[in-house]
Length: 115
Length: 111
Image 1 (cartoon, rainbow over the protein chains, first blue to last red):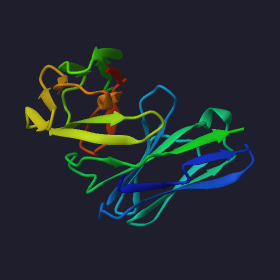
Image 2: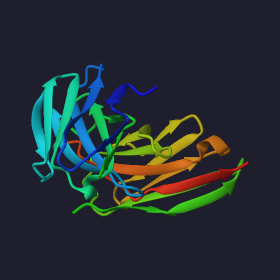
Image 3: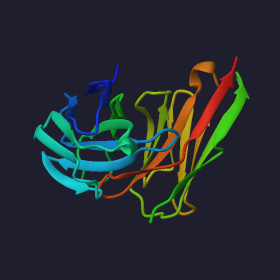
Image 4: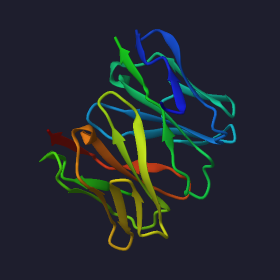
């Protein structure tokens, strides 16, 4: 069983809907990450939070809005998405971000389909 | 810009065979290299992490090596089993722990 929990596992939404993806970890990690993975492609980094502050935004469109309310929880708020945003969204965490020596632990992802 | 390539893209082997997966990267200024496996429709499972100062890491039947100067890493799987069938991804990490993933190798181990 993964130590990073993502909900929901599947989500279907229309282009005008607002929804949120949720990620939780209870390993005491202080860095959390959102990745997007299209079919048969490697994951691509979207956002990084370090100590609940946004550290990296990889020029992600504003229809994706991340939030880190506390050190265990990471949300991704979705609004006015496009069909090309359909993908597997993966959350990861690591003990720290700085230094680059920390392994990242991934959740099972949320499979998102935009109608 | 860092680019990570994995060869082969797909591999099919009979059960029991030893095999090697390859990963190459263009910028040797990395802090770590991590190997993952991904089962269909699932998240990533971390297999091994090699820090830039290390040459190899071992876990059970898996051994990963790193040659930073030549921009290469290999994942060696001994005595392969059908349960090893998955996509294997390597990823290089920089100072900010941002991971750049390779293109992946789809492994099928035939019983």
